[in-house]
Image (cartoon, rainbow, N blue to C red; front, top):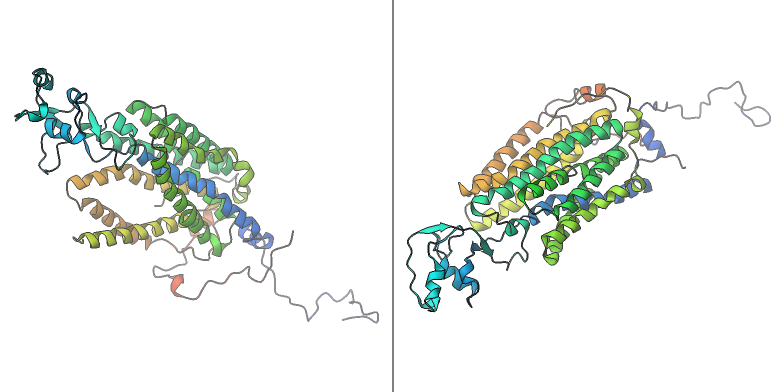
Length: 457
């Protein structure tokens, strides 16, 4: 009530006309975030800050393949025939036996002939009838660089035929480095801070990528790629977690879509053209190290995780998770499967960060990604299984995808849910959900912070 002066009576504690709806308690980071702004200019700047890390991730992943590309057309290099005025096709026809898939020629053997003796007679070797039923292994090779306009380290060191396995082994060693990096930098990120871990892993990736250009043996190349692999996955995993932790619940999907749907796509689209125009694997190794320079600007473009700082002193424990025969039909299904796998990878990247509690989020996501990196290590050999049967690689991928889809049915839904802050919240997360819970098919989850506007700073 009001007194004669029009002022409220100090004895009246409650105005019946005022809204007395109790405000929620500010107990967690998700309770505070809507008041200071959970999706504004700051979040857009964080999304923009993901650009260099997404490009670095795409560069690390695809550079491994461009560094070891070998042209499909390669044959024995016969030194005695090189000084002669012969075309490459003539040298192949003279010195290389026909393969079982003629008109193709054998890529790993040459005729067992002493061409120096034949040439000593002074005759035109093109007019000499050569008969040799035996063949010997090649010691050196020459390549057709029409489609691939440069000699990679695999071509320079002749990693073909009985040495072809070195290419797959080098790629596997790269992903083995990722496994070690996931364990190492995941622990550092959760116990020493996200930013120090990100700076360290990107710095190592920068130095190792640049050092790759100096490799001249398989051992030196493998060592450089192992240390480069330490940064793979972590260079995008940690920034994504930082941005997700500052993002509104209903906007988290945007983070992954921007990072992978736009930035990663741009990086992976531009990289082949860079390799094509650079046309030198050593220079390309230097170019692939440039995106890792983001390590030196990280403190100025990304904040430390406020969630992680709030729970830094709490104990942490590991949380373990994780045929068509016509050409047209094969192409269609391959593109469709790639599209669906990309979508699943994007959702899985966000899902892992939403499911794990803050004290072990980086370690948990890193551990989950390690299982994926193990698959990366095996992937080259899955591709090589096509030598047994053309459809075997796709069959393996189909079985693994079906198994993964089945296991996902037993995981809790995170749509519209706050990120778990403590280990107890992480253990209890989703226990109230039934097996058939599908929020996407029902009414949208209410936002309990929708009545409150962010406080203007």
